[in-house]
Image (cartoon, rainbow, N blue to C red; front, top):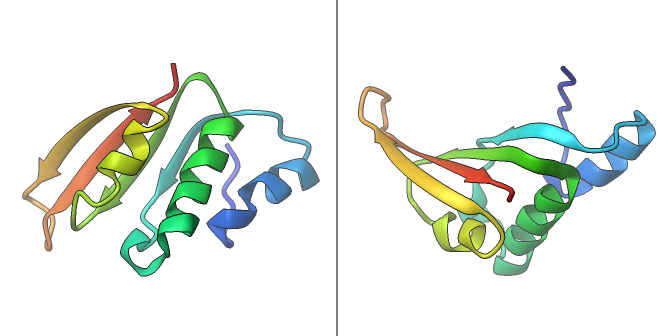
Length: 96
């Protein structure tokens, strides 16, 4: 297990510095709604490239904004967790 706190757009750099090849999973609650369209695509593409086949990118957000971005590269399932305040959309994106 490796936890990295930093700019998600630099995840590939952080992985290289730690000698990590591919990830089994990535979990993100970053506020994608505050990022530009290009930055959203960049984070999704980079995360896809960093995950091993069968790896999962789990994104939790207050809106389903990221679903189309994730579907470009992943097999995606979406659940709404009402027990959270505010409710969260939990998107599980699996790399094929």
